Image (tube, rainbow, N blue to C red):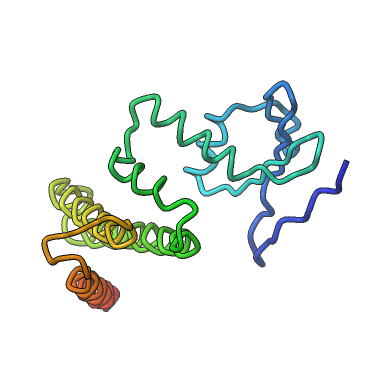
Length: 191
């Protein structure tokens, strides 16, 4: 059995919870000394509690595959966040020349999306108290999804948009959109 690698811990933060997955598919939380479920891990993510999952026999870090399992379970419950076209495009990127760029782009896009949502919530709370105009949040979500779909179409090898085969106008439009969003973000941060 290999030794478990130590997870990186930022100063002032709790270390990640270590979870061991056994051959019988059971998950054991070493912090609480109890068996847990994928639903428990999903709740930990929602609460901002970090965790790592190791295969109990080999000691391999299997956190990514467990997180993927959680997504599959949530999608199976009807919590459909990932559009079918997005999933197809994502699968199409595996093994391609752009594969190494996709994880960083997706991480950046999701971080930006989360920051936008939080800034909007904060602004709405300051101006309207606890009332949220959900229509505006839905519109922002649609804009973010459109931006991600445009970005993925740029990576899809056989995509031919209305601009033609070169895709340069689409890339320029995406860059302009990113710059616009950066400016909005800077404006929102001003006191």
